Image (tube, rainbow, N blue to C red; front, side, top):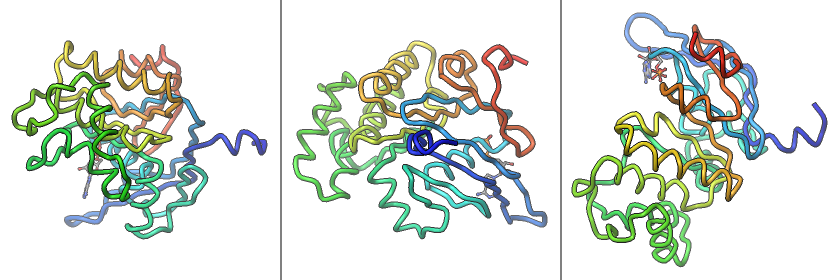
Length: 236
Ligand code: ADP
């Protein structure tokens, strides 16, 4: 790999393994995964249920640690870092969208979006959060609590929260998994719009093959291994 392409990698995994120790048997979910994602790329990870997609995404985003192997996020090796240090890297460079939205129920839509900025002690959090809620079409829902919002609206709040710190890389775990087709469309448009306008790198886990086939690259995980496949192989 040349020095230039090395610099462009916003995510790089080398020999990542993950074993869960629970119950009577150890479960090796990831058996040595290596791949990299360059700045501005859109990538989908597909694979059967239970194959380790969520585990892999969490490790890529620094939410969890591998059992062994290396993870570099925006040029920084995060595999040996403790939770606080990984949280600082996430706050600086990463956005994350969960399938079940994970909004804080006691905070309004606006307050939920402000959280990442307040954690960083940034000024102007309210104005920026408002701007983002308007961008996702929820300018009239700022004072609503999550329970007062539909699933699609909650996911748009979650997206606004994920964008608010202008991440270089956005991870989304089944971002449309809990939504029907009509509600999914604006979420997908927002994700890809962010990639186009801001150059945000996008790494998605999805079981929606149509969505997966719209990304630049397609990776399939199975039996603990990750393999790059072509769009036409996705249906096999
Ligand atoms: P996917 O997202 O592809 O459905 P997951 O990454 O959620 O797969 O899970 C992969 C496997 O690891 C599953 O068998 C799951 O039961 C197991 N697993 C996931 N998280 C844990 C955990 N915290 N402790 C023990 N086993 C886990």
